Image (cartoon, rainbow over all chains, first blue to last red; front, side):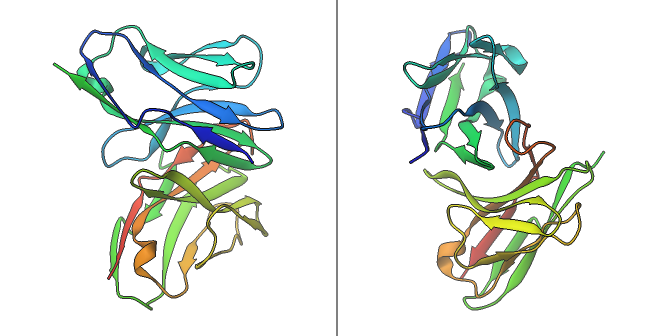
Length: 111
Length: 113
């Protein structure tokens, strides 16, 4: 069965510290991978996506993610977070016409 | 530049009532979908459509109906509301089914009493 696992439901981190949000996927076919961000009381918006090519993908707001096929992972990183990065982050993959989302990781940036 | 528009933003229903959540997009996207978001469960796909006249079920389709008569509109119907359908519902669209970015509406918060 196809699935996405986000290992951490909440991640607290101090401002200007680095952060990594973990994502693993399970699929028997090739997939396309995405990270979305949801700010309070809003819809989701795309941070970055991996379709093919370079395994290191850069997105908006200084975020990047690395696709690791052998570990079936697509972890999201930022070297220095801001208070404004406080939000919920969703990993997703698409294949066979369906987007499958993880359960989300709530990032809380502390002053 | 409206993007994906959902109405209503908030709705309270009694058990057994029916209602329709509206979704419209002005980007000429072929792919449209409905998700529900529940705490700790992420987004779960209810129904999706790959073009006018074509719809299919997602992970949690029971209790919901959809239709796609035009490219722009993709309404979600609750036939007989149940408390288990209390959730936040998101409509999303994409220009390309698998590789395209999903554009989301702002959500519709539904409470079933």
